[in-house]
Image (tube, rainbow, N blue to C red; front, side, top):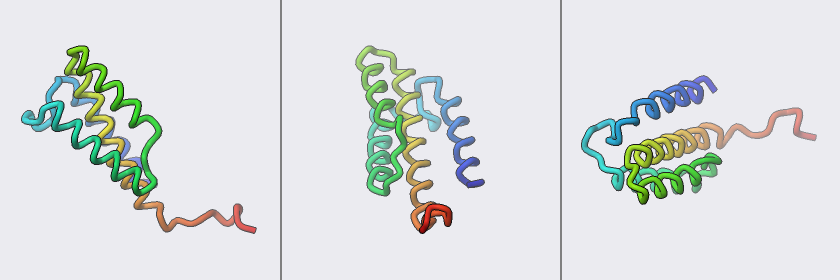
Length: 105
């Protein structure tokens, strides 16, 4: 749980740094980040760890890109990618957790 909370804090930092319309590396384009986000989303979904808002973020990112708001599109795509990566980590960390004793008969 502690690692999960630390990862969630990192997500906030990533999202906060994504406001300039260019990925953190300064080299990635929206299309690059979108492709990475979609790959991460598929991996998280396959592991059973896709978070609720990722699909909506990607839809809104595509709408923003179509409208020409590349800063917003990039920020949304980066957030979707980060949330998908965190969802995958969460699913992997919890895969053998089992049920709590109070749920077992």
